Amino acid sequence: MVPNTVTVTGSVSMLWLAPNEWLLVTRPDVQAELQTALWHAFGNLFAAVTDTSSGYTTIEMTGHEAPGLLARGCLLDLHPRVFAPGHCARTLLAKADVTIAKIDASPVFHVIVRRSLASYLWCWLDDAARHTGMGSPG
Image (tube, rainbow, N blue to C red; front, side, top):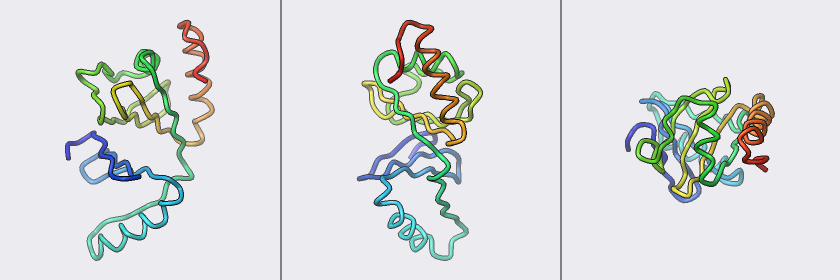
């Protein structure tokens, strides 16, 4: 795999965030089974599997205006030549620490944010969309 990329295998999305750090995103019904499988697979390796699901929210943004809206609040170059489908990165979006993953070329972005900042970020996105004539994000 390549750093700052997303790999999807079945119901699991694997985001490579740092040399020794991965964020795995899956459906709630698969979560416990995946965590147990990883613990067994790591065996005696120096590794940790930590469930952080209760602390994060994912906001899905779709459509051709999504990159422009995200660009209003972050410094990532979201142009398709630079941030292609399957890429991910940590950044600040409207001063909130987020992970942005580009899921496909339509485009679909997943913005993963701490649950404590989700309402703030949603309100910021709503306000930014209204001030650019995009309307409410939904």
